[in-house]
Amino acid sequence: MHNDREQTNSPATIPANPEPVDAQHDDLSPAGSARRRFLLESGALTGGLAATRYAGAAAPVAVEARDAPAASRSVGAARPVRLSVNQHDYVVDLEPRVTLLDALREYLGFTGTKKGCDRGQCGACTVLVNGRRVNSCLTLAMSCEGEPITTVEGLASETALHPVQQAFIEHDGFQCGYCTPGQICSAVALLGELRAGDASAATGDLARMPIEITDDELRERMSGNICRCGAYAGIVAALRQALQRG
Image (spheres, rainbow, N blue to C red):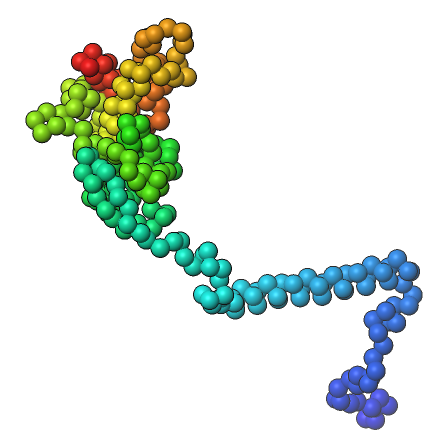
């Protein structure tokens, strides 16, 4: 049977110069045409930005050390520093950035001083510098050159414990003991502050001397030393005994 329609399997022919998209939709209103153009352009922009971001992540740019600022390449050359610790003099080569805590523990071997938070918040690193308590994790070792430094290892004599050490033992002023070296050094300095008449935030009558030593006074003065085991009652009792025995 004859078919009037001629069948063909040839693909559709694409014009050499196809009409622009906007030309195909001349019947759109100006607002519709502008909206279509906005969507097309914003889509192209978003895709380009995404491609740029992933391309940058896949191929990071290497920076040569010689191109980095000099300050980021060097923290300062080490130099000899003389530290007087527990009535003995030591000379160690330290970079300017080394803290007193790291100098004591890592360079001189005084590991009784503990590293807790390393942020000056817990007090585990407390030592005495010229009789005053300091957080050694926040103190540069070079700043203590020539100053007498006392750690927990230097409190006892050859024959007896320091009165504060003895009081902590008798009143169970610790549990795990990690914070105890800092607690004891802080307590030793506290006794000196009370003898000197130094007031605290809890001192009720600033004109009254000697200062009335209440439990609140002792707690306030020891508030920079944290005991996560909660042995505060024993610590206050130990302080009272140390005060009585001088």
